[in-house]
Length: 248
Image 1 (cartoon, rainbow, N blue to C red):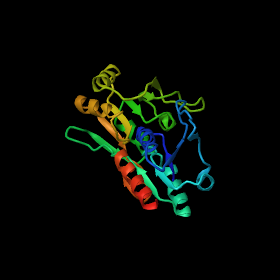
Image 2: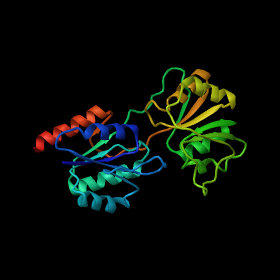
Image 3: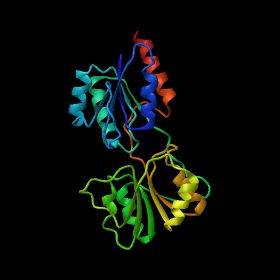
Image 4: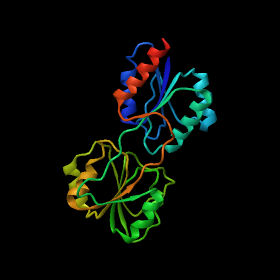
């Protein structure tokens, strides 16, 4: 059986590493290629599919038997396309989605539905903002006056992207809580803007904001397609094993 993993997350990488050891399974991985560190191997591809039609054609051409969507929780479009394509071809599909963060005591969260909503409410709430939403959506904040932004991304934005007023830092998690607190203090940050990505790699900024009494504008996750969903790699492997046993 051939399983295609739609990747781009740490969980996807761990799943691919473990799944190749399962009997009677061939693993293929697809990466969006949003960073230059997305490196292709013999069983991987990089880049988009060209919508539902392109993904459907790929699944047919490569004779994919199982589809696992282990993309980022905010990669809503590819998840939607995967659901439609899998239904068309009657392929078993699983979503591997890490648990989202939940507010705890002393967190001061303001939850919003979209990046645009976060940009809309900032002028009445903040003066110095730590913007940690990735590089592709920074433009939404570019027209805001009277706010200084500390922006962090893994890689530089494309030249055509208009950046907000402030400073761009290039760094990759996992991040340390104490260093995050130092960063927030150094730049006099009064508000953090973050997507609710979940996981441990970037949660330190949430802890730091909590301990420093800094408010967080938290962008909620988009609604995912209906379908079977697990929260960790072991559960995904169990799903694959069950289908392999049922077909051999």
